Image 1 (cartoon, rainbow, N blue to C red):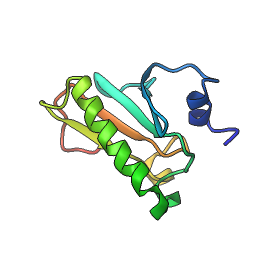
Image 2: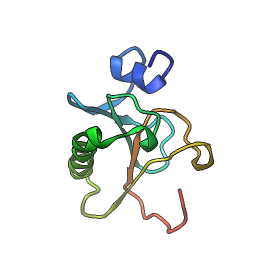
Image 3: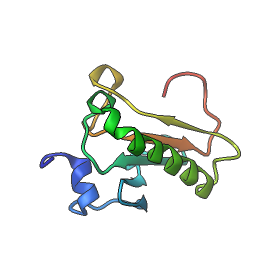
Image 4: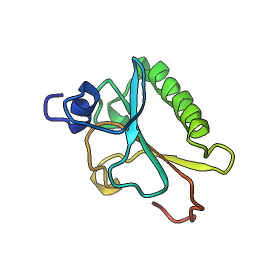
Length: 114
């Protein structure tokens, strides 16, 4: 999508602190981290949020989950714990209309919502 900031990051048009990339997804450090480890994992296929996905995206979603697990290990939070979340729509405070997952860790989190 032409005006999507995450699409531009994926294409290299906007710089990012890349953590991981493959054919299906791209991961980079959040510019406003909420925890010592705060990485965004973004599918390269543009979808505004989970509501725009279909049965055809099952492999993509499974792949992203596996990438998140590997990143948690590489970033040193797999043993202590981490949080994975995605926001969907304005009431959830989704700030970029491109599906993305927040991987947060490196700190004791509370049970309250992030």
